[in-house]
Length: 470
Image (cartoon, rainbow, N blue to C red; front, side, top):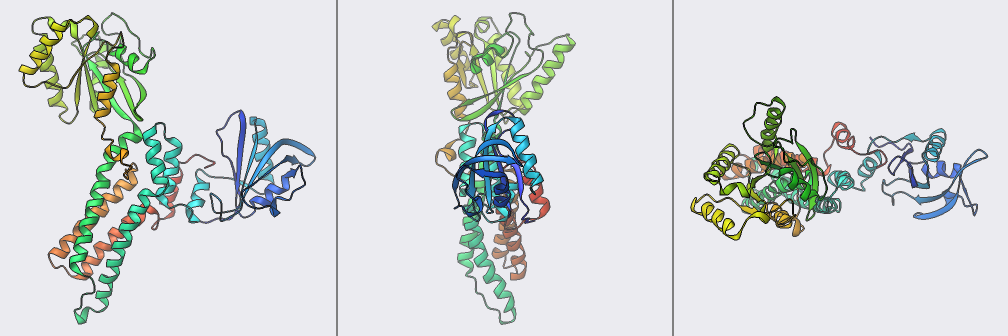
C-alpha cells in the first residue's frame, strides 16, 4: 500500500478563516512546492533544512495568488515519514481552491480520507492503535475523552499490548522449538513460569476489557433520561442543567410531546440529557406516541432521573404510588440506576421534607434521593455531583489505560479466549502442537491491535473514518 506519489489536501477546516493550511506529502512534495513558491529571499526549498519556515508568494505563472509561509519537513523526520510541506495561506476559500488546483496541475493528487496518517503508520511513525487515537483526539469534545486519546496516542495502550505480546512470543518460540525435538521428548519452556505469565496476561486483558465500559461512555457520552409524570418540571430541569431555555416550559400538562436531547460536560465527562414526554394515561394520539418514545429512551439510557413534584407528595397515597411506580421501573430495567429527584424544594417546609424522608426510609426501599428546585436553580450543582458519582473515573484519575475502540475490545476478548485455552491445555497436559496453535491465535489478535498484523481491507475501514487532510 506504500505509495510515493505526492498528495495534497486542506489540513484546516473548510470555509473562510484567518488562515488555512494546505499540506503536501510524498517523494516530490518539496520539489512541487518549490515550483510554485517564490521566496522573498530567493531561497530554494529543496536546499533548505528540515523544520524551517520560509516567507514568500505562491505564483501561478506570472500571477501572484497569495503571500504565504511555507514549512519544510524532510523525511523521515515528519508526521508521515516522507518529505512534507505545509503552506499557510490566507483563509479565503478562493485562495485555498486556487492553490490546491495549482498543485494538482503540478503533479499532486488529492489525498484520500486519513491518507496522511495512513502513510505515518505504513512508514513506522505510528502503530495502528496510535493512528486510531489521532481520529479520537480530533473528535474529542470533553476533557476525559481528550485525556484518553492523548494517553493512547503517546503509546500507553500500545506499549502495554506490545509488552504482553513480546513475553508471550518468547515462550511461543520455546514451545515451537519443542516441536522440532518432539522425538527427544524435551521441554525448553518452563511450565511453571509459563503458567504465571498466562495468569498475568489474563489479569491485564480482563482489566483492559473491563475498562471498555468506562471508555465507551466517556467517548460517546452518558445518556440520561429525565422521566416522570406530566408537569412535574422535567423541561425546567433540563433548562436548569443546560443553563439555557432549551425546552418549552408551560403549566399545561403534556407540553412535551417528543423527546428533546442536549449534551452537557460535567467534570470533564459528557452527559447526554433526554427530556421525555410525561408518563400518564392519555387518549391523545400524539401524546401517546411521545410516551411510547419515553420508554424507548429509558431503554437506551444508562441512568434515569425520576422527577417528582414534591408538593404533590403530601396528598394521601401519592408517596406510596410513587414508590410503586419507581419499583415498576426498576423491575422493568433492573440494570439501570434510578435517581429520584424531588422538585420544588423551595416550596417545601422542613417538616414536609422530614416526613417524606421518614416515609421513604420506613419503606425499606429508599432510592437515592435529591431535593432540588429546577425553577430557582436550587440543588442543581448537587445533582451534577451525584451524576458524576455514577461514572467510575478511578482509572482515568490514575492515568490507567482505558479502552475506547470497539475493534480493540473485540480483539482483546478473542485474545483472552485464546489465553484461557492455552491455560487449559497446560493444566490438562495437552500436546505442545495444539497449545502452539492457541498461542499463535492470541499473538495474532495482539498484532491486529497494534497493526503488526494487518490487511488492506482492515486499514481501508479504519482510515475511511478520518477527515481528509489528516
